[in-house]
Length: 81
Image 1 (cartoon, one colour):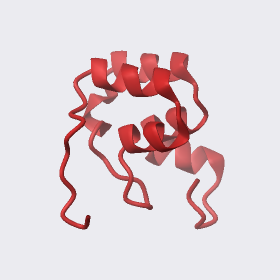
Image 2 (cartoon, helix red, strand yellow; image 1 turned 90 degrees about the vertical axis):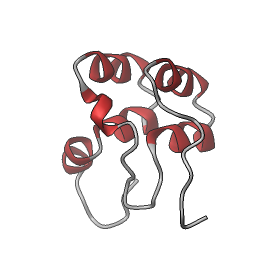
Image 3 (cartoon, one colour; image 1 turned 135 degrees about the vertical axis):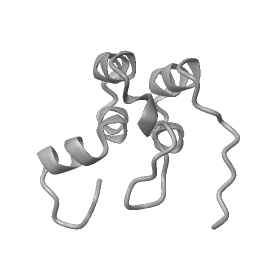
């Protein structure tokens, strides 16, 4: 996911929501969101993707629905696009 040589544990710690989405781990994503990881909903990974963007690109529908349910705005405007 990172391409910069980071270990899986590093990526999981830095981008917890992204990691759960990448792995399509709906249960882990749900637990993260319920435990207050909502602060990471709009965070971007090293490739400039938010968790909802990643879920959409990967076709992880359940993850995308869960993120939307927990308040992730789907219309975040990126200045770089």
